[in-house]
Length: 293
Image 1 (tube, one colour):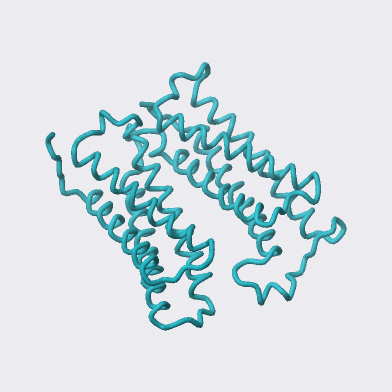
Image 2 (spheres, rainbow, N blue to C red):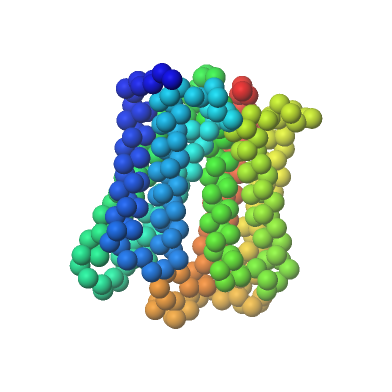
């Protein structure tokens, strides 16, 4: 089996991401003394990014792209985008829980600082990989390398963060309107994830309708649904007429991480963020012409 090694900016970027993510989770596991569930999440982010990057490098090193059961036009950039978002979330969450107000031994704090620094470096490396790999104007590329494809990744990731905030503790069972918002998040997440899987698995040609038209129709539906959720969620959580609280409780200042009110606000902000992402997706999808593998 021939080994194919071409020195390119993309190769060096992937190697940098591999090293940075490896150092981040290795140092955290070795001396970080992670005692909270968020530590497991950060370790997962770094380890998952490391393992996926190693897989991509090995496949390209041995020239196995044509034997892979996925579309190689779509898989590497999809993974790189998810890895960038995962490492970004870890770069924010890890210092919030393990460096903010840390009173432990200085050696443990140093380990945590090193993990945070290398997590940030890994985030930059993955963002650079996405920037290098994304489709240029007029270039024939897979759907996931285009702006709408990358937006789909961001939309599903933001939805996952919403699910984390909204489920611990459960924040949507107080009123039917909040359950409606939860259904909006679930429906849009499932459809966006299905589109990503169809593209990565090269199954878009099996659909009984034009894929491009479906994308535009779905983007329009998602904008309408998220627009309603962007209005409904704050009304039923922060309006005193509906049992909400506009002011942040004083008890939140002494809570490690995010209190319930903070999570309600985070969901409201992330809902608005996803609305903007879906709106941009709609604009791109309405005019984008791409070649499906």
